[in-house]
Image (cartoon, rainbow, N blue to C red; front, side, top):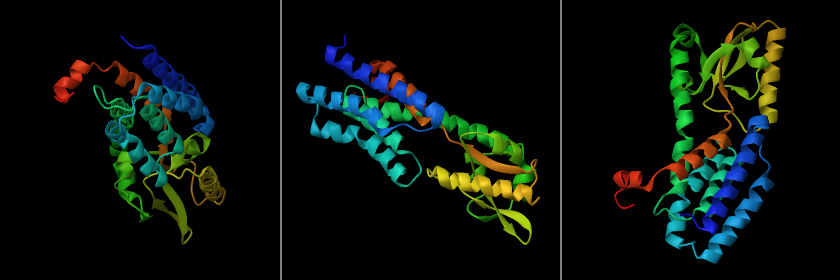
Length: 244
């Protein structure tokens, strides 16, 4: 049976992640202030309940620190860190159930499945892949991290980013290949504008293929991961981690 304090923490986290998920789906942006009320409530409840054991809190913080490292490297957004940080503040213990670890692990299952889907799409365009000339970056990574689409389709899409950035060499286009996109939307818009300019100059055609990757609504995956973590039976964890 959950205590009133535990129920209040869960409701606060679920409400915040749900609101942030809607914002993430609409604009791929979540304002920083969204995380403040639930974070303050979590700290207050856990301080008054004496739940902040230094060792367990340090261990529970590892997922948030990993996401922070990726955010610093511009591989994830700041909202990803704040989402996991909120879960950490609300659930600062790893025993009997490591909520922070489970939330992160479950949230990564969907992106992992997308990698397999990308590979299937990429293998269907092996001829184009073989002819693709990357003057910079890894071409092999494209098979796992992106998929080929028509230039015209890409220009009409939202929350989709180029992994093969066209550059002009001798009047023809070759590509700088990258494994992720920048969190700087202005920079990404300049890339799209450059692509449109190449279309106007007929350096590229609308039916030419480029490799793209979606900007995933990762906060939605954290919400799903958090719900799955809460629903994971402790008895199941006993089989996986005997010490739990």
